[in-house]
Amino acid sequence: MSSALNLSHEPVTKIPHGKLVMWAFLASELMFFSGFFGAFIVLRNSNYPIFGAGSNHLNVPLALLNTFLLIGSSLTMALCIHNLRLQRRGNAKLFMGLTLVGAFGFLVVKTIEYSAKWNDHLFPGQSEHTTFYSFYFLMTGFHAMHVIAGIIPMIYIFSKMYTKGGYDHPVKVEVLGLYWHFVDLMWIFIFPALYLMIPFHGGGGHH
Amino acid sequence: MSHEHSAAATTHNLGHDAHAHEDHGIKDYLKVFYALCFFTLLTVGAAMMEFPDALGHWKDTLHVTVGVIIAVIKVVMVMYIFMHLKFDHPLLRLMVYIPVFLFFVMCFGLNFLETWDYSYVTR
Image (cartoon, rainbow over all chains, first blue to last red; front, side, top):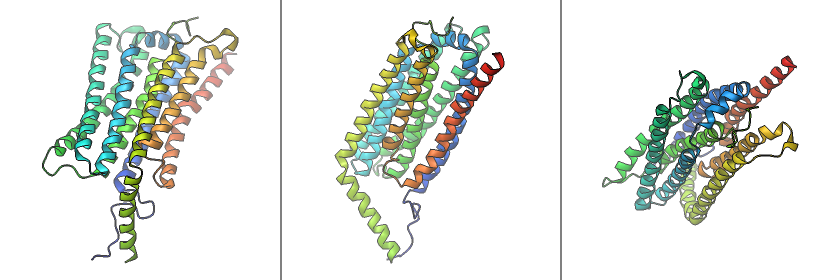
């Protein structure tokens, strides 16, 4: 019997190192996004008509669908971790699969949205749409990249779950889960900021 | 020896907690999920609403204010339940509060300064 100190987690707080590092990374990610949000809010308030006109072209029902897809995949990720901890491999596999479906669904909807914007000539460089659509593509684009970055380890873990040994690292999935919930959190801010800042009747800010 | 004991005790506690709160955990997750869906629809509803003229300049800004408040409620729920902040060591919360505070300073604090400055100059 060894009497070695268990170094898989921080001795005082009992938090696994991976989780601690992920929280530190998410803190830096938050600072990354706060630059966009800060600039967006300041410019929006001094260019209200331009931002209002840009925002009125956005497809709110599609963004709402995307919100539900991300919230749903956040739930299934939490349930996957829960089941993995309880050694219920079948359930964990199912919920990881559902999380992937939500993530891919989000990207599909995003692609539909982007191509519609492209066809309607709503992108930077189109005179009056430059300012708003720079922010639109910058913020949703970086967010979509985060979704893609989350999908890659998810596919790895999901495929490992199909091997004979299964995937028995609930802490690693928990760390990935933290990242995935963060992606959801950023969308919770991006959705109202870009899509809903002008009332639908279109009157606000145009007088 | 004591280290080994505490490590074993931790493992035991983790296993015990996982079983004891098994269904409790799923219920919490589902509750948060339903609340997130409800608050999302509420944000859209607030954005579609036309507020009465009696509110003055708040008429044009109230939907933004409501949107931000709802977003903060949603964020707190996700962080405490989905991201397990409620169940982890309190020291971790400190590490999370500081960047979240800075995020709001960057987004809103600076913005208030800016707004105040412009109205002051153009008055």
